[in-house]
Length: 168
Image (tube, rainbow, N blue to C red):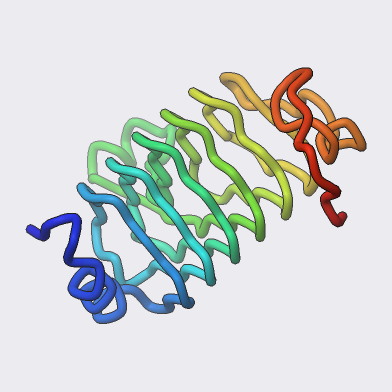
């Protein structure tokens, strides 16, 4: 347990537990992990509360990734065959999340998925397949809605202008 002001203490804990941690990494508690030692997190990482990772295999998270509340990233899964499940068989597939990705609240990312750089995963999505770079993807199952385009570099929300130039 830690207080919000104990940023250095929290940083020390994740550096001790995670496989890799970049600079400027902040995870809002509570955080839940099977192991923690299979987490690879880049620079400038932010996760809001209730991030749950089933890290029976490696989870790779790139630089400048933002994760909203109540997200689940799972690497462990079970066979469809009931006879194998009866014996508690499990297999694990790594998850890869690229750089500058934003994952919306309540998203579930399934084993073996890769999310490309610069993509946005919409609120409540269930990511069952790979998502390419530079897209907005939403839904259950998560599908590409559109590519990130010029409009997104001029407006931060619908018709609300950013008000200053943004480099691409």
